Image (cartoon, rainbow, N blue to C red; front, side, top):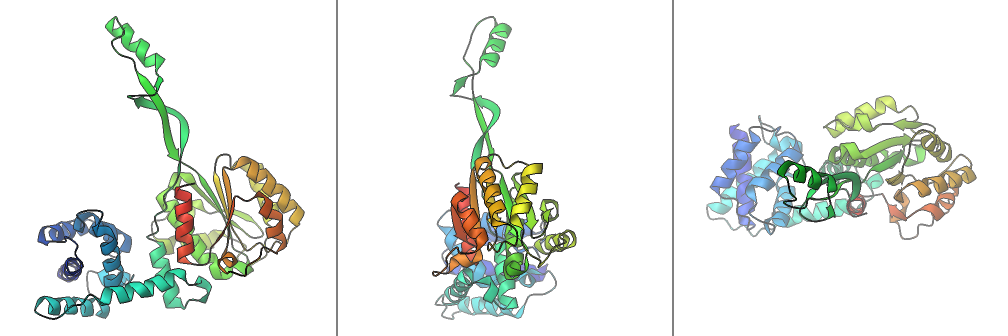
Length: 359
């Protein structure tokens, strides 16, 4: 625990140097919070620090930059038994700065700029270490969700007259003392995500599944995920596991058609025969290399579009300026899409997440 305290105290010094109000009292609150959390989980440490060390909205951008610079996306920096050489080096620099050294604040922007480059790079072209770092940042993705009106009602100060409650109160009190009102409650709009795990999508499949994991973790009751290839496989239950790595291991056990072909038309037909997408946002993540009948895919896309609130197609190749939807599957699906978006980088998935939050 002493190593953890030293690490987080050094982080607080970094924040203070950047102008965040991370004083001694706030640092102690953070250490108390971490005593009840899993400090090897980067997401828990991030939110514990954000909630305890920041004093207001102006601190949040500086906190994010300092967190990325100080920990560099590595879980090992927060293990109870030891700190990494990177963390020790940064802590020593901060100690030197407080004892009279000249800290010009260049470390955080340099690291942050590297992370910014990774955010926009095609995940298929990353090294294993870079891809692992992008996946760690993906785990922190905020999977916000647009809300829709439900059929249920709740009490309200304004709105439609709640006749039943008004009459019930009148019978109990002998007179109409006040009018009762009600309004519809809201709930997150359901997202149905189809992830293509065929051979042509192999470079992007893991990143797509990690994005799916972030969506399921943020709204477990309003997210349904299926893998598609030569078979339609529900994988929502497997993705509910807290740890992304464990969740993907569970997915790998139940998906029988990794790196095969794509028969999306047949799989959408099977889905529509068994389930409903009424009112949902349907997201199809695929490059459109359809081995089945494109005409069947077009027919099923038309059925899907009539049910769904929106249909969004995520194509990794859309991130390139010269991309044209020329494959048979894309040409068949295009007339029924509300949007065709990129899915090749962390920045693209951040934009998609923002789209789902405001659909």
